[in-house]
Image (cartoon, rainbow, N blue to C red; front, side, top):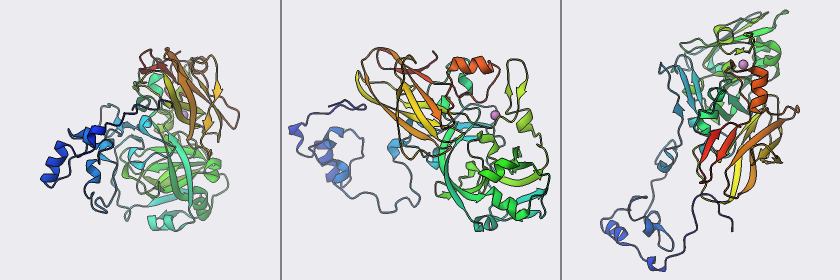
Length: 423
Ligand code: CO
């Protein structure tokens, strides 16, 4: 039988048929022992565990459900920044399964904090090169024909800190500006059709209602293709930090253009050259010229188990698992290397593989106990292959901070410790 995970099979101890001393004391006091308290052995088979010996919490004890207390380590972490309202919080990818990010741990990027907006007072203005300028209430927006789609959201600064050296300790620190949710809203094309786009229109400005007034220009063609004005996420209204009550969602593009707390859409004939697309979110190349309007999140993948901070418990079977995604469409294939990139073998992809969404891959691996390096490489339906770090640096140098989609390496030490390395 393969050894899986961290817990070895324990032999049944026939001396523990009965409720132990701590259990008896608790029963005498009319209380169920606290899970995890000192009498843990009494909760193991063949004993009847404490939580079976009494009624549980009342039905609907929490009218809005929460994770189990034992999972309280599964949280976002905020990266240190000078202001509490500016910066990022990171998704705990090492603790997540499947492909959907629970709303409570979706990463944040904010430039002016989270505004607490009253949806009754909120309006979205649509103006500029349109025949009929419009002002939408939330009721208006929800009344339009709706769409639901699953897409990833990734900040173009994801993995930026590891460009020169592997400073991130965990996959949460290195790749945590990445989430994937089910998004529901109205197609921006529907709203533009309602307003009537004038001849000469080519660009659209989207502006947020937060204190930073974050705004970006998007080509009209993309807006007419698959951009959504989103009010719901994973089946419920957006969380405040995710743009409540309404945000833009631009599938496959850097997260910064999916303007949260959307208040204004302006149609124009040229890009608006806002701060967020000139002073920020440009890519400085080795020759000192900055690339502008680099929107696409190119194909990328990362192994989330095992990853930095994990510790393998000896040689044996492990299921290597991770996530792959591409702003250009579907993931076609993921390759895994268990020998620092010398040889590659194809991983299994979890179906359904959706366009511009996280795809879970899995790879069975038997570790012989020797030090090695694990890597994954994504290939998308356009044929694009995720680059090695050396290839990325050769193309883009070291000035760049955005769009680091290089292959990630996790080093496995002889004792089983997993750490962030570069090869
Ligand atoms: Co960019």
